Image 1 (cartoon, rainbow, N blue to C red):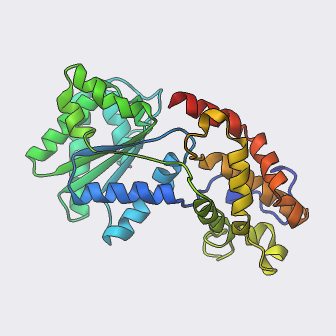
Image 2 (cartoon, rainbow, N blue to C red; image 1 turned 90 degrees about the horizontal axis):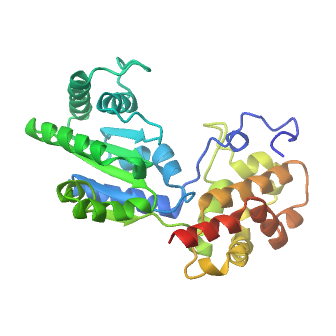
Image 3 (cartoon, rainbow, N blue to C red; image 1 turned 45 degrees about the vertical axis):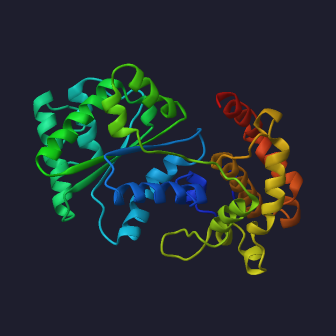
Length: 326
């Protein structure tokens, strides 16, 4: 459907390219929690949750912006998206952090030597704090379930070095459920000091848990969004301008969408309903594309239509895997 849209739909639209995020109540909870840890000057903390709930989108699109709004100041923040195939040597580790911090003199492919990497990272973090007129800097690690024990110890070392210089480095980690058990394993294997520093504070990232939260998300597509930037044209208004003018809104479909999510959830996942944002987003995008080509609103937004689009996204299989993992 993305490749057969009418000519009036710009192929660069963020919905078409999937380069966007809609703010959700679980994202708000996550950022509020990080804000509280900042207020408490915690040395570390971690957010854990199942895949596809929206954690990475939150880190990529909203954490820095919303924290700046909360504190009314520029946040000295480094976001590192830790990939499973990232460098495991210590020199490579510091190189990845320098790149994540947008250090302008970091070569994109050539890591500095180990000692130089440590020195440059320390100076970079201090400079970020100084530029914000603070003695505080944050490192947020996405996909942190892939961090190794060695890497945690390297982080502990630079945190200690910065503390000696009068700077506080807080390391906030975001990852899968595996991270929830990592601190216990560390404690049992003689690394309790690492667990106490980075993992004593923790919180869960939830899925969408009620029809009201579904309505909040749908309202994001209805009115609390825009493309192109600065246009004030919401996603629904762009794809279905006629229906939008007539006052039709996706948020009015929250009940049908919630019912479809419950209906397609396997029995093993019915202990508590927490639904992944990614599958909901794919279904909403499909609805928008159908509206864009002129299909009837009542048919496209019907209960049966939501069932069909969720099924196409393998929603039930994903819920079954999550339930097994829990």
